[in-house]
Image (cartoon, rainbow, N blue to C red; front, side, top):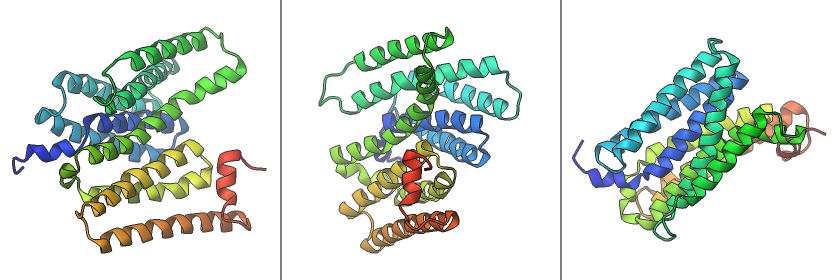
Length: 284
């Protein structure tokens, strides 16, 4: 609003895009599981990140054609996910959507990861092209029934884990941008980082309760690296006070400890690490 467009360059559009696509893919994951609360969180994530991308497109920090294509994908994804949740979408169309996000996620993720570090590495579309070919091959084999039982089980979890990895790459991209351009860090909102840390942190209790390792991985990573990690960057650059940073750090540690203690108590375990053990390795 003040006309300071340079401040928006503190937000990498590739990182924001991976977060947005991660939100959209996780929305499909939770729509399939009928997790209404998690769907609401992911929908808000899609909308809020889309608004940021729109701002970046307005100041020409990202290409307009990219923004138009992304807009079409986001609109289609939101409609299809909610139609599926309310039972208005047949299984065939939903299967095609799952195939689309599987192929899209597997090709976009490595390409964005590669592009994040350009020009320190050569600019190339090879990572995305290789993974796109592999993803299309996997989808075709799955649809033709050419995969083994173990292969189908692995294929079934691809889109969920790809979504999580997309979501997890966003803080990596943001922190890399912070390292490259520390002077732009003032363009980040400390309160936004705090809310990101708090919102994802609160979801950890639910992920522990239902023992969902994929959801826990994404939520924990974003809590620590995107929320707390960027607060650490802001603190190191003297953008936030020591009191604010210490209060946020103490609150996060206390909440994680409380969530583990309550889960341990509810299940009658004698160790606070038992919930994490079951989360990773399953119940005994």
